[in-house]
Amino acid sequence: MKVPFQRTINAVLMASALLAGWWAFRWAGLVLGITVIAFWSILQFNRASRQLRNVADRPKGMVDSVVTLQSKLGHGMTMAEVLDISKSLGQRVNERGNDWLWRDSYGNQIVVSFRRGSVERWSATRTEGQPSAAPVSRPVSVQETARVADRAPIAAAA
Image (cartoon, rainbow, N blue to C red; front, side, top):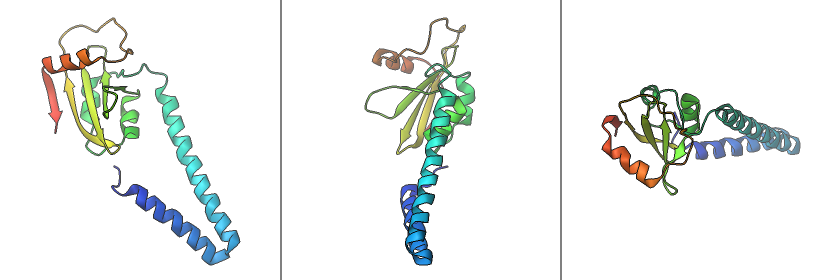
């Protein structure tokens, strides 16, 4: 789960690494602190790019099972954690919001809403029927998102 003041904590840790380096070894310690910060940043970038490379093989917004994704979701999860679970990039529902949509081959959908980088709520809709033969990697239109309300919800987390 994400710490609420993670950016502040990271800034404090970076400043203390620089101050501790300066206090212990003067200029050489300051350079060591900068090197450690740069190395940590490279590790974080590598982790993010590896995660995006892993989800790039799947169609956008497609998951094996919406029900499984819904059962693994939790409040406060980051987008990176949701990508680990879904193994796919979601489709943005609207341009200005932070709502992302995933579908499965049976036509079930789940819309996950993020606030400040973490999951705030989600709602899943389930359709009865056979797997759809149409590709699901196309963008979602406003009319399609309006039709989501016509379907029976599985369960919605508030």
